[in-house]
Image (tube, rainbow, N blue to C red; front, side, top):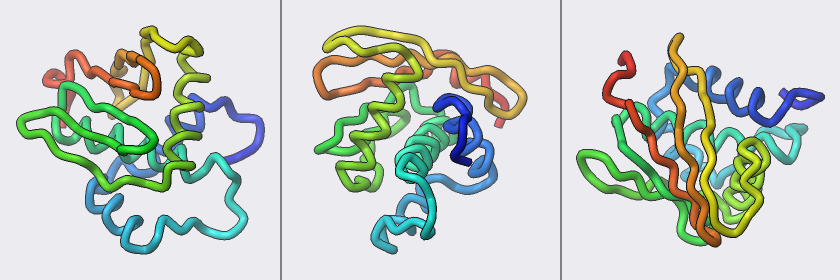
Length: 146
């Protein structure tokens, strides 16, 4: 998946790759295996995979938002509030850097929109950044096909 593909395209490819996988159990298994990746993968592969699985979990759960912070991990807010397995801080930090690169959100505090293709639909998520915390709001999630 490396090469000259844009970070947004690479994130979308990861999401497409894991579309039929239950995201939370996949994260739990990856954590149990020590967050190891296949030899020869590039440095952005694991952060992009983690982001993709986080997005897919939130979408599966019809969560209205989730927060990501490199030292505290991911908290999902939906019918219930729960934490996802916390990847190594370096994965999360690089994933957030990629997310800011995609959205152009390079300021200490701000907001941007990210469009994702999910199951033949487009889902626009709102990324809000304040310091090291990134809040991703998912308006219209209830209308997405299951």
